[in-house]
Length: 97
Length: 189
Image 1: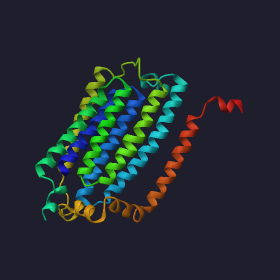
Image 2 (image 1 turned 180 degrees about the horizontal axis):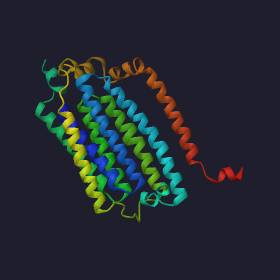
Image 3 (image 1 turned 45 degrees about the vertical axis):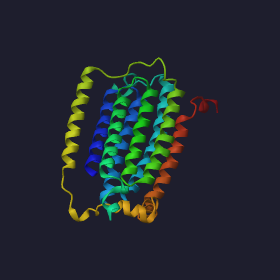
Image 4 (image 1 turned 180 degrees about the vertical axis):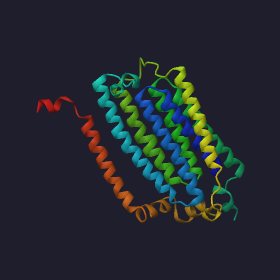
């Protein structure tokens, strides 16, 4: 099942990258990043079955980092919304010059 | 000996069928998630993807990770996302936020290039002496339970990383509180 799991993981990761590139809603872009993390987790679990169960420990760490990232990222989005009244990324161009 | 070669002692055909079923449901939900206009619908399709991934984890002999996936990812993280969507009132009257055709073509090209790269990587040969015997993970779960093979390394080899993780979570919580604080408070004081 290793090859099949790697196939699904690759496709899910690519869908995540595609979503980051085509969407302008900051929250949906953020959820696409979560989808990419999930795809990597699937790779970790598949390799853990083939090369040693300790690989599942890394899934645990990835989930912790994802939780921390969600907390900080959503706080940033809320602060941004309070400031600009939008989460549309094309309206947030402070660094464009 | 039959249970060693066949995961969970089920028929291999049925196992393969369900593996593909959950995998393709996950991919279909992910595609719907990326293309939905409404953020709430997108979030719910992402939850569906995560449930299918949990099923795949269980089929790959990672029952504990599957449970954590449902509890932490689908349960906690996605609820926070939905909560923020509702807090910002993005559910209705949404603007169509997909980018133009040029962006879509570029994104498609990037996606195809990435898929090709990843498939080329998965074709790479791994050294055979690293590979565990067939059914080893299932046997370990049957012998020691679903949690012990994960928690053993977590509290021995990776203890330092585990402690650093607690610092990371603390910093993230403090950062979220500071960022989420009302702007007027500093002026009022």
